[in-house]
Amino acid sequence: MMVPIRCFSCGKPVAQYWDDYKNGLKKGKKSKELLDSFGLDRFCCRQTMIAHADIIGQVAQFKV
Ligand SMILES: [Zn+2]
Image 1 (cartoon, rainbow, N blue to C red):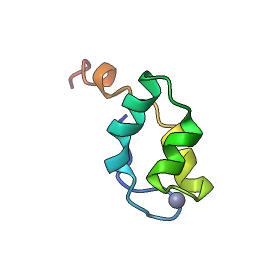
Image 2 (tube, rainbow, N blue to C red):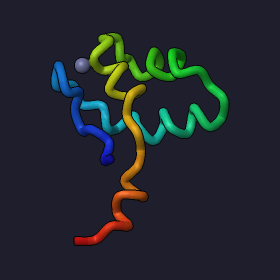
Image 3 (tube, rainbow, N blue to C red):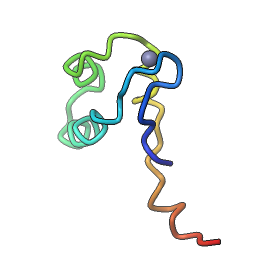
């Protein structure tokens, strides 16, 4: 779905890193390097980025 604006557990804003994270992965960078470069040290914030599935485009096809 949509990128979580804040970490679910600690509340740190993480959404501003999503585009850089996604583009970095496409370029072949490692997830660890990217998360370290963003300064996301806590495992709760890291899992929020790693576990996010970007399916808003698919869900948006289904209108009410
Ligand atoms: Zn967190």
